[in-house]
Image (cartoon, rainbow, N blue to C red):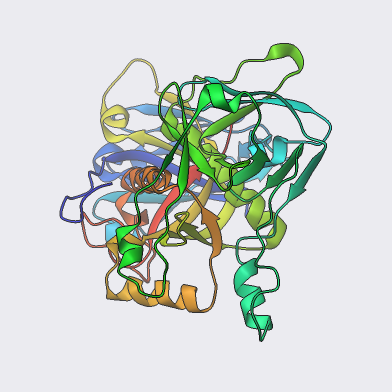
Length: 407
């Protein structure tokens, strides 16, 4: 995780495209040095593609199936405070159908009366073999304990932990609960975590130690042992495949891409099912690490680096525009006074839907979002009402970023 005093490295954006399928409109941003004068930019459409001709180069962006550009609909528009560095164009698109992408999300994959194998996402070692679940049941959402406290005038009557029985699988937002079997002894390691020093400074919080579960092959942390018989495995740490056909897990994705797509799928699913747009990413100790405000789930984005878009070439650069979540974020470890007010308000009002992840995964997710923020045009790295000082993405107000959906 980047230190507060270290500036976030931003890349020059040559061409950036954001389309909104529900609004059937889009925003095209071209760096001024790449675009030159406005008359030198010509936008045309093809079969599910967008062609951008500039004085220095041509770029082709492949659009998702069913999305096409409406010819001659691009109109130059003001770039606001970034008009000296960027050229902005509004354009229209036509959406013939909305295709829902399949999700590799573990929570949506698991079904009762089917047999699965669990693999370590880091090294693809098989952790659990041929697990047949007779029951696959969802757990209450992350804020249910707070609701109980608000409605009960005595001690929590539901304080007993919800644990799976044999051949059960309980689904949380970011983890699964299941019982141990014989294969665990050969593939999993357990160790007691050190006490959280920050929790120790709060006299209201008891000293908490968790029993961490890791992969015996690569030592990657997979989750925790809640009891001697119960495991909590996080969906960002494991892969699940059906035992039928002996299919091997997909290992071609980088760690950051896997994390990005897994969390994006979860945020979209929870937001869809619960009409929730505020998320509090927390460590297992319950400490907020990252606040997320989901703006929309219908974006299609593509970005061409400045060096690629401005270099004369005989062949036009071509890449695919992909679906993405657009969100605002605040890193709780980078908070200023303004951010502390927002975080306090969310905590008091139980605004953010709790998403629990291991501390290391929280740090990885923050890095993914900060990298996304750094790759945006300068005019899109902050929300208009909450500006971010140069080189301090997310250090004051809301930073803006995106998470890509599975292809």
